[in-house]
Image (cartoon, rainbow, N blue to C red; front, side, top):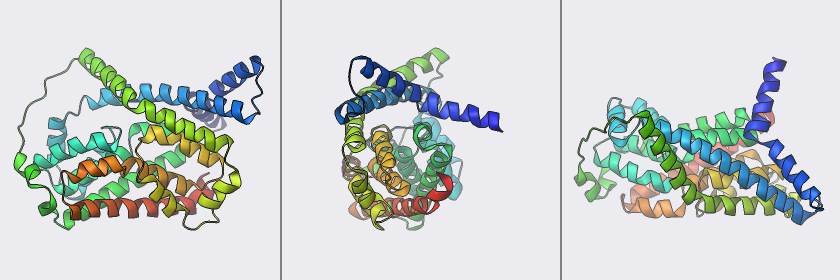
Length: 337
């Protein structure tokens, strides 16, 4: 067991976490005559390290997930979902969301397509909630910072929110609150052409480059904010707002996250810095979930497809679910950290 633990720790710290890279950058800055204990130099070290680490993981994960995604085009996804009913369909839709787009805005066109195709509304909402909130990339990135226990529990809780939210919307029969042009659009069953392995590799490469170009600015912003938090904001301030002394820290973190726009890759460095400053885990993860699932641009896009009552229900379900998950994480933090 000790050998397995040592292997896992090496994988988590040196492969996913790239701690060696931080040491190399620190040594390089020291070789230039810079004092890495200085706040400014420490901020530069944090910025360079986190940008490189996240970009490397980002490109690898997007390439891998896009290759997997090439086996699940919309037509095939629709057929898969159409075979299931009830909570089973919601569960499959939530799981399907883990291998599809990386932010809420890019999930909405697929949601519209699935709804137009006649799939149950609750099923398509389970997909819509899960797609930006939990994916294979978030699992590995969270593992690199918080460890495997927290990463897996985060993904499980995210899937629970997606399944429960979609099931509730299905039970309330909210179809009349979908804009008429969506329901009238219908769909055409077009068989996707068989792709060769080379085609899939080219597709994965194109998806990687396209996604990287879209999210790289948010990575820079996120790492910049993380560097400020990590080196300039006193730990006492963070603890006072998001620590155990503030019982409303989870609610505050969720509300702060809602109007922001980023994806999991842009929020990771902020979460990493907050965690290092003793913010409670549940508050941090609630912030991440709110940013990735309820960003203002995605809400505006979704309003084009659904009426205010259904939009408000979606926001309410996600917000309540995220807050509950946040408090659950805070409660179990002593046992998993």
